Image (tube, rainbow, N blue to C red; front, side, top):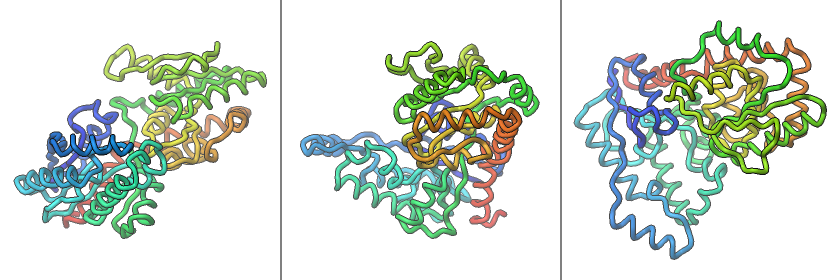
Length: 381
């Protein structure tokens, strides 16, 4: 099967969108006969875009050209021309929008972490588009889902939005979680050794994210406060963001953003992952969260909230603990104390997290599943 891969982001760059398109492309190479990565389908800005943006400012609403019919039609025209020239057996888009106006006589699908409707409910910024802008975005999403022969979502939450809100036929919808964005994940033997080497005290909590409030960094600090006040020594390592001054504590260690392509910084991140007992990310909004997959690769259970796509990235009792929406710091602290009270229970969950990574949360397994569904559509099974 010859597959054409479409993306707004540059799938040849490991830095674009956290490297997700890049890793999808590399993983798919192992499951199809041939893959052609098309250039990023981002049309240039036009005078009409500037005029619409100006009108939006006057009306007091936000403007996003990626959620306009003009943009969707321009993307569709570009991709349609590329596909016609390439003549692949199937098209896979990382994102739904390129399919909204795709004119091609081959099976086409997309793989993404959310619908517009699920984003609208998860992230506050989308409401700023205003009533007309939101309605336009919904029409584009509906058109893309109607055109798709296969709609793949990283979470059950997003898949339910596609079927329940947009009316996607369930047989065309699949849930395939994303994978860990790691170039060289640790071996199973290294993970077993790391789990065995984790001292019972202090409890090492890891926060790894670029959005302090949305990812629940402030709640993680308050949970660490509870633990230390109760006589349970706990350290919170913060990676990816510099928290506000109010988060300063003797037991909160701030490491800043660590680049995976800088050897010294990558080694530091790998050490923090290997030493952590648990990834604490009580998210307020989350479409999926590849960081949960990365933690599982290191045998680190995750603690998160039942919000958006997080429960598809963290299997409760298998690769971590999923508490209710907006868990209180005391609830998080109590859950961690219960987990660590019985060393055997913690070791079992840590090993289970690694096993879940190997069977579910890695790009090779995910790409193989998606490729098989596309192959069935083309008759190349």
